[in-house]
Image (cartoon, rainbow, N blue to C red; front, side, top):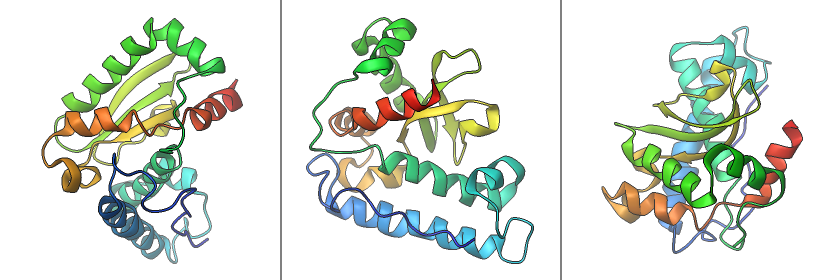
Length: 195
């Protein structure tokens, strides 16, 4: 199976002013594309040549795992962004956030602190654990919650390439901007498909 860079559900400049067209050209157009190309090269003539992406993530190690996880993580991240969507959590995900964190503002604050506080590069995730409860976790580098038996619901990329062109070293400013482009319709759909 040959993996391809997924088509964004919005124009390359659609996330401005929160994420610039230039950042998207580098982050999506170059970084994400490179992970896809590397993955295709690494799986050629191996037992993973026709495997699903999730299988590669669960069964591989080293560079193969890193590139597979980065393809999956970036796709998951980009597909849940939408500047035109000004909604807040609603439906089942809103209730789960309230049960797990108290208020949306408490959740947002906890998620933001996890993203800002992650040392180095990686991801902050909202996941559903084996007990059906929501958790916020940090993953360094190409870490993916699937390997821990957790179900990803939402993520924020806190690698510098996600924000440095727009925000330089101000990760907090980037994460605060991220809240303006979270597509809660996508997050709700992901959550309800698990229930």
